[in-house]
Image (cartoon, rainbow, N blue to C red):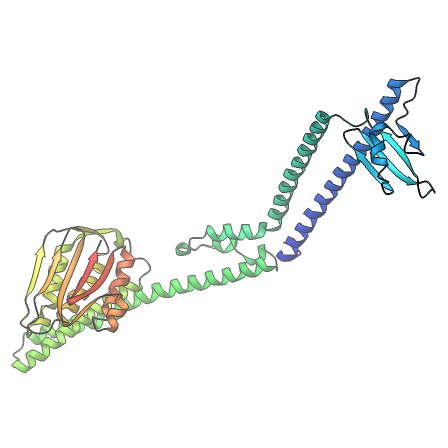
Length: 409
């Protein structure tokens, strides 16, 4: 349980990291200053010890320009302003002071030869400082990562819990892993509570979907079965020609209704007992679809040409494939006008082509939704969904005066 919100914890972690790094850097710079100070005093003392018993006179004052060291006299004649000056080549530090005489300056010269470190020592000192700075930087980075990781740990914990959930097979352990009570009342707790409610809604939806498809499968098929049985009894009685035509229309409407029910139930099912991996042959399904829809061409004098170039075996849902083929064949038969045949169906190793003639000249490729709006059949959108569910591909192309539906696998 966390007492503060995620935003406040991140701010506190950042402030803590900055404060710790600032303190560490402050101690590092203070230590460097003290080290430099001790080093200068040590060098001065060592120089004095080496000159014992004569004390080195490396700091002297001069009231006149003529008394200055020869290398400084030309510079002193330029009447420099009061201040401090350094001459690296001569290893001299000079302080120009006001002597009270407007025409004459006083000089204090500090000879640092033997006190300043050699260049090689400077490089070693720079290397040591760089190493210390690098080490502090790495430690600071590690500290920042550690602090920020602790600050966002609830978010990572919630993300891992959500990633481990199998939405299709929810269990009580899944609900326990994302229980909002585990994450407090901050932003992470609100997010966990939202995800928890969403999972509850998904579970309820899946339960309703399974109940609906199970009930609808029985309740919708039963009337169709009753109607089909009644039609078979009527066929055995003596009927007039007009009654036979009406009976034939009822039979076709019943068949269309059965196909529609099977199609929507197939789309509504979330799972279908592994039928999406069943292997089946394409040729029998195509032949059956042509025979079922042939009545649509009875008065159009349109031929059907079927090229069986192969008899491929396809993995997927056989009922879904049969529904898709029935839709394509029915659309082709319905939208072929009298005398504009033939309707060509070609089966290759990896695709099925259904081609029919149009009365208008076009040259475009449409999506299933666009094709439905142009009158090529509302079932094409359903065909597209069935193909997506099974990993097949479906395209519809209107070229010149033809419509070519392509179903590939």
